[in-house]
Image (cartoon, rainbow, N blue to C red; front, side, top):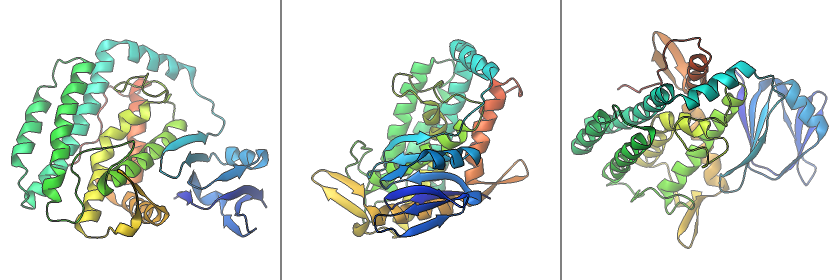
Length: 328
């Protein structure tokens, strides 16, 4: 199975003997076996030449660039031969209120049910979350026959209740959530969530780029928010499963340290040590497997599965669209 490779060092990414090397400022060379790479994610200052891009293109490797704070900057995507019929279908579905509503409603309800599943898991562990669970269940029932705008308002109400549950779960822990803050995150838990969401967006955009779908056409998020918002639509479904659950677990198992964070006035970010720690835990988590319809999927494969389920529906190769809902 091919891997996602994270590059923390700065330097030149070069092609040598039909493979990749990273040459740092002190001329130290790290070899990166090309056959093992699925995606490259760069956190350091990386320079790259045309010959290297040609090699990445040949092996269908996406390279994504992030700044120090884990914010996505841009990417190189291998040359694509996209199907114009899929583009037409995706546009028609976006313009068709009935079908777009079906996709948007499926995504939003799946996201909320995954939030609900996480709270039910902790409720079974004797955390007093029953009132919050009942409130979210009530909001989900209201999601019938609503416009996309109305669905987003209901989702926002439910997510507020969901995030308010975090400090109940973390009441006896060193680190607390308080409220969801971003750009910038104001404390450690928000810093971890923001970084985890950025990694999940990167996973999705890498898969979307190699699928038949167009990342510029989404069904839930406003096209004015970001020119490539389909990744946000899909990532919302698995955020509770892949990021929120991991962050809460790291905190409750007391694996977090103050040394992983940089504090600047009223903001908090993961530093280099914290990034390496979190990325390692995240990658290990993606290797875990779950059973769906008598088949086993790693969580990384689950991301691909979600993209391809939507792709098949848009291509008229399946009669319905259903996204993943976590069950405990």
